[in-house]
Picture 1 (cartoon, each protein chain N blue to C red):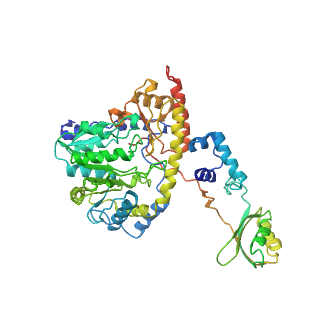
Picture 2 (cartoon, one colour):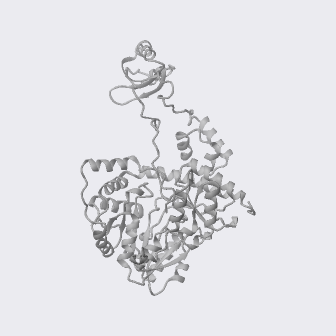
Picture 3 (cartoon, rainbow over the protein chains, first blue to last red):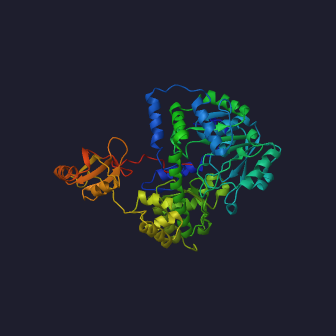
Amino acid sequence: MSSSRIAEHVRNIPRSGIRDFFEIVQSMKGVISLGIGEPDFVTPWHIREAAIYSLEKGKTGYTSNLGTPRLRRAIAKYVEQHFAVEYKPHDEIIVTVGVSEAIDLALRSMLNPGDEVLYHEPCYVSYRPSIQLAGGVPVAVATRAEDEFSLKASDLEKAVTSKTRVLMLNFPTNPTGAVMPLEELKKIAEFSIKHNLVVLTDEIYSELTYDELSHHSIAALPGMKERTLFMHGFSKAFAMTGWRIGYACGPADIIEAMMKIHQYSMLCASTMSQEAACEALERGQRSMERMKEEYRLRRNYIVSSLNEAGIPCHLPKGAFYVFPDIRGTGLISKDFSLKLLDAKKVAVVPGTAFGPSGEGYVRCSYAAGMDQIKLACQLISEFVRDIPGTAS
Amino acid sequence: MDSLIRILKQNSAIPRADLARQLGLSEPELAAKITKLESDGTILGYHAVINREKWDTDAVTAVIEVRVTPEREGGFDRIASRIAGFEEVQSVYLMSGGHDLMVVVEGSNLREVASFVADKLSTIEAVQSCATHFRLKTYKENGMLHAVEEAPERLSVTP
């Protein structure tokens, strides 16, 4: 069959690197995986139970396109309490099928063909293709290990042009676990105002910050609310990946435009997921804190073990990933990951799956059981020791 | 300290080297903290949670609601500690509501528990009444589910 029946702009999107790797891992048995970008916890029981109850009550119809009023009110309250930004439930909040849909809607709502979008890299795999599918031009700004992968306003200044319309942020970051120091975040806010950009902030990991660090959203900084789209969801903090539920809060004109696309493509987010999301926001704080504490302990373990094994790794302050530097082994990211998988049956994701600036690094997720992490660290240590010529 | 107690409460058998690494402590630092908790009586002991379907299946557990006459001096304390002294008694709690003490008793068979209630507990002078409830099945104990749940399947690599 000729591929010409597939639209050109879709053909031009390269196959996801993570998917190739996934297929190799899937074909093997007994793999210990640190390659998983989702919590290993099952959704807390009280949240599952609330969804079951909503089914018992027969809540199986469509909801308002924007999401149920109850959920939008709960979101408004939660965002105000935890992020210090106030949004009106009736026209400044839309409930989406995960943050992924919110990103897609936002980009499609705002970009004209040829508009440029700045984003920091290494980053989540969907940003670049989502920008391209929306007709935009992706402009990656690399972050550096010496800054613990936080973003510098000065690097953004070098990349901005008269065509730049949007800046995408994701802190804490998948895959690096980076967070933004408040001082630098303020500079980025000033930069966005100076160049009249809209900021899309993907806050999916924002509850998962450690070491008494308080997370600041750019939406809360002076002059930013009117130019920021705050996107968040339930997948990571409440272990609800499969429910596919998230939301966006922002200026009413952007929400209205996003709603136009959403109503004709999704209609509304799943009703039972919306019911579960209400429960998560209203009563999920305790289970969230418990999972977060568990991640913190695992992070301490994995960082200490990897450094001891001779692959340098800073202590990331957010998300549930570590992004160790594997350059000392003399291998490139892809070879390191493939050889480790082949020799020790441990799966980590090559840094290059998150953009070319991820070369020299691999992503290890610590959203895995402690026993798995312990075993994986031991095997990685053996693997690194056996590579000829590694100084460790 | 909170993290340390929480982890030990959940799994006191965790290897100390792993625990130290998780808490970002050296092993001697950790050992000193644990010794302090043990010696000041914060940690009273360590238990294994046993699945009774697999071991000692004939053993009987009863929860007994006891109503007592409190004493002018000492209230419930002296009588409670007198009950707590018996080897069969696993736990004793002072309760609000319709009865005063809740006593958990374990015996190797029904007769043993029955004779404890009849001969020892109900004959104590201050005890007014006992309502004995026998355990039929355990679903969750000390935070541990007794049926082992199978882990749901997850994809091995996701973005």
